Image (tube, rainbow, N blue to C red; front, side, top):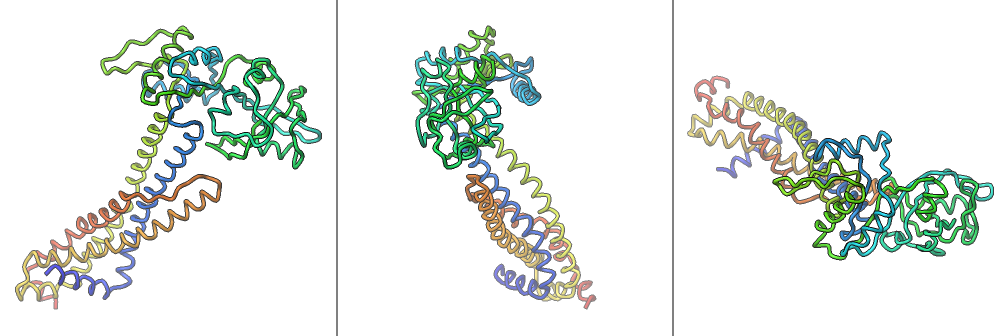
Length: 428
């Protein structure tokens, strides 16, 4: 009987092709949106994770500045981010802190970083460039590679040497095809000798590593910016299984250095870090946070998509209701010759589900095509966007289509099944 209902459902859909196409279209849009949302979520997540990993592997821990707050937990983090965006400055994180952290047992090496902007010139060429002051160990711990010449040494950093390493783009802007090694650029009317050029790397989170002038961090601090602090530090840990332990040791040390009271432990075993003027986070934690954020965004978009599917479902219910009205006499005849309540219910539910499953299948295909086009466009624009459609996307898409087919086909099917055969036959 079920197969017979499927056969009859297909015939019924063929009879009203235009109506069927218009009904299916609403489901197609919704299901395609589900596929796109999941695929885009995976693409964004892979992009962000790749960007985070480019700053270091899973064995790296970052220390960065944070605006202290009287608030606690997530509220403190949010308030700190807002204050930094509004221009608040934290000047307590210094190279002395990095040297103390390097003395911890599980810290292999570290580098500090600070960013500035100044006009740099060579001959008749002048540009306002991003200045990136880093420790000499940056080239060992980061993923940047020297393409020509060399990187500066720790001795050059400590002696405030006026040397620079250029990113590929800034090299091309200032020197074109000319070899820049050994030549000098002007920065604040001071000459800085070019000792190296980095290999092309591209942009990470809008930070273009190829359009940067790299200087020893102390040189940038003292001879250009006139400051004593840094923005962040990266630390390589020898035992990744003890990252949490290392991070807590670093927090304890920095609070001692910055005269911040050690917070009392809560019953949960978690310390309140609201008053800290720094943040310690591992690359693993950063990736977990981004997984949570992208997951929440994906869920929010799915809720929005579900609304469009509800609209499509209402359309199915209306069309099935019309179909029941048009086929009243047929229903009466079937019941008169012995069709049961369940038979009529099955017939119209199968038709409703066929519409939504058909829409779901076309929606999946269109969603995959559009997702691939989005990934292609993103990669063409220089983003490392992976084309991924996870298995759960197919399950949710087809599950949604079947669910809405049953839910929104239930009322018309029930109405048909409850018809009185004598009253129905009178419609003939």
